[in-house]
Image 1 (cartoon, helix red, strand yellow):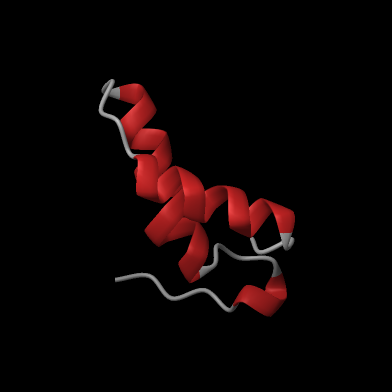
Image 2 (tube, rainbow, N blue to C red):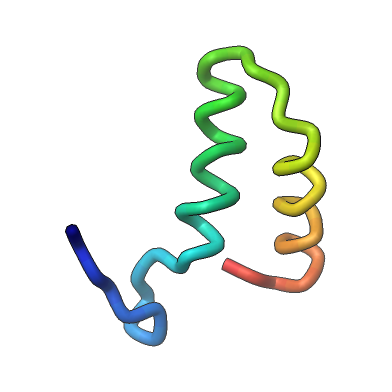
Length: 48
């Protein structure tokens, strides 16, 4: 397991739990409407 401190520019929990799911959904052509909404919220509020 790899731990990275977000303050140092590492990947956040949001990126791993939301953005990664959206990316995989697009890659494998699986709809992820709820994750898409959460990802949009994160982008609007500058959550990385």
